[in-house]
Image 1 (cartoon, rainbow, N blue to C red):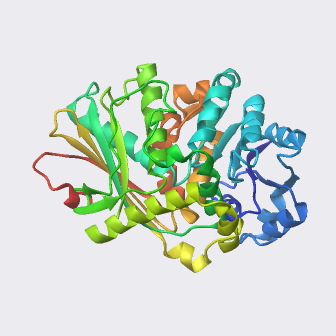
Image 2 (spheres, rainbow, N blue to C red):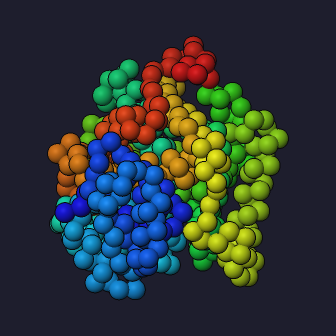
Length: 416
C-alpha cells in the first residue's frame, strides 16, 4: 500500500510534487502515475535524491481514458495527488470517483469552482459512506487563505471566548511567482462559465447561504500592509472555498464555527496604489479576453505549452507573504495570522501544500477532525488545519504565526 500516488507526475507541477515527496524526511511510500511509463521513468531518474530512494519509487501506467487503471491505483494508496488539469476537461471527476469508491484520500490544485461544485453534488454523500477525505483546491488556491482564516478566527475566540463570532475576514498577500502552461490551460477552460470570474454565486460550494459579500472592486486598502490591494482572477474561487469551510462548520454547529455574519475577501497587495489598480485592470481585461476571444486556449497553449514552467532559479526566488485579519463583531478585537513562505507559491510551495495535505491524510489519520474522519468533499481547514500548519512549518519552511490585535494597535506593525 502506497502512502501517496502522484497522478500526472510528468507535468510541471507533478514533477515538483514528486521531488518534494521523494526528499521528504518521513520517506513516504510513493508512486508516480501517468500515461507514459517512459516519461515517468525519466522523471524518476531526474529526482535529486539518493539512488536507493529513487529505486523505491514505483511507476504506474494510468490514464483517465482507461477508468480501470485509475481505479486500480486508487485501491493501492492511502492518498492521491492529482496534478492533471484542467480538471473538468481532463477526467478529474473520474479520478475523484475512483478515490471515493476506494475510500482513499484525494487532493488537487483545481481553481475550478464548477468542478468543485460537481464533486459536492455527485460525490459528497458517497465519500461519507466510504470515509474518503476529498480536498480539492489544496494549493495556492486556496490552502494558505483557508488555514490562515481558521487560525485568525481562533485568535478572536481565544480573546473573547469560544462563542465569539467573526464579522469579516480580509486576507492581503504579496507574492512573486510565475505562470506555467497548465495555469493558462486551466484559465482558458473557464471560458464556458464566464460568471465565475466575478463574485457571482459566492456560496455555490457552501451547504448554507451566508451574508452578502463584497462587490467587485479595483482596489481595496489592506491595513495589515498599509497599502492597497488588487482584485485577481482567482479571488472569486478562493471566496467560494472559504465559504464552504464556513458553511460546513456552521451547518455542523461546531464550536470553531465562524458565525452567521462571516464574509471573506482576498486581495493581491502591490507596492503602491497605481500598481494595484493596474493589476485589477489587467485581470479584468484577461477575464474578458478568455471569455470573448475565439480559440484563445490555442494561443495560450502556443505561448506556454502544458507541462512547461519557470526555471529553478525563478522558482526559488519567489515568495508569499499573506496576512489575514479576522474582525470580531464587536469591531474592536482582531485576530491576525501571517503565512510566509520562500519559493514560488504557485509551484514550488504548491508542491509542498499538496504534499503535506496528502501526507496529513495518509499518515495522520487518527488526528484528523471528526468531520474529516467521517469523510466527504471537504476543505483544508475542515480536515486538520493545525496539523497542516505544523507540518508546513516543520517540513516545508513555511512560517505561520497568529496573535490577537487590539483596536489601538497598528496591525501593519504586528508580527511584521
